[in-house]
Amino acid sequence: DQPRSRGLGDVYKRQLLIRARCLKDIDSPIFAFTTRNARGQDLFADNTCISHPPGSIRVTSGGECECRFNFAWPHLPDGEYTVEVAIAEGVQLDWRCLQLSPKAISFQSEGSKCFGLVGVPMQSIEVITA
Image (cartoon, rainbow, N blue to C red):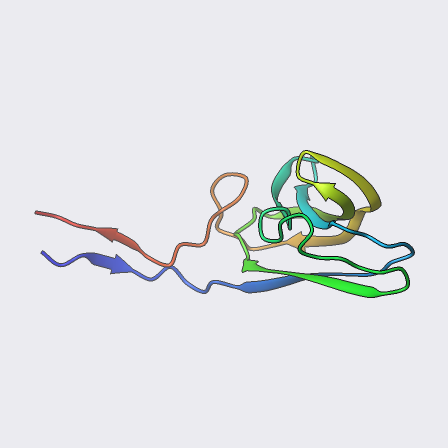
């Protein structure tokens, strides 16, 4: 039998940009973000530790740098949200924070059809019968 599938609507691709001017040499910069709901619960986050191993990026004093996180935006229940961004130096388990902006972005979600804390946008859902 053929799979039966139903498209589930638009997947919104988003880009989170972190831009910085460095006041000192940074041998292994880490860029990170965390999205939180109004209760302060971490909903989703990422950093550059896996995508850019230690030593693969170096920024010199006075230089500018930016990091672009490209991803499919999840469905969020109605409510208020914040995004924390950070720049650190080091590796995943041994780092030192250089800059932290706890509420760099604030936004409101309205009209969502989300179940749970975060809805993962499905490309399709298939049901296969014998």
